[in-house]
Amino acid sequence: MELLKKASQQIERQQERLLEAYLADVIKLPELERKRGELSRKLEVIKIQSTQLQSKTVQRIELSQITDSIETFCAKIKPTLEQTNFDQKRQLIEWLIDRVIVSDNDVEIRYVVPTHPEGSHVPFCQLRSDYRVQF
Image (cartoon, rainbow, N blue to C red; front, side, top):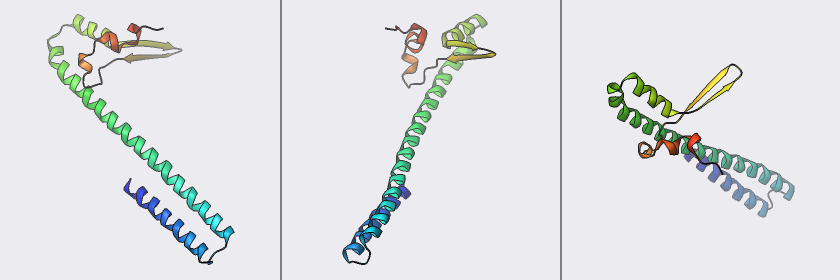
């Protein structure tokens, strides 16, 4: 991120020097316009890269938080699972399954697991899509 900021500042300085060269009559107008266009395109590429980098950073932070939340959920439920019988474990799995999608030879099982730090306090009926009211 810092490198992109420095590159952006360098291009802005080049634009200033280019204008100064034109005002000092070192270069002509067509040359100024061509070089300013090149610098503007470079600056736009840097801005796009910066936006993409910020977006990826936000995504990685969110993914890290989700991972931490899932690990917390697993740590909380593990001692309980060691004490449960097969039928109770089966019931828990049924609660965690949001939907099963069958298409051709593929079966996709979508689970619902609390991924928010407060997720373990949210009732499963609010996590599962088949319990949601559709308007």
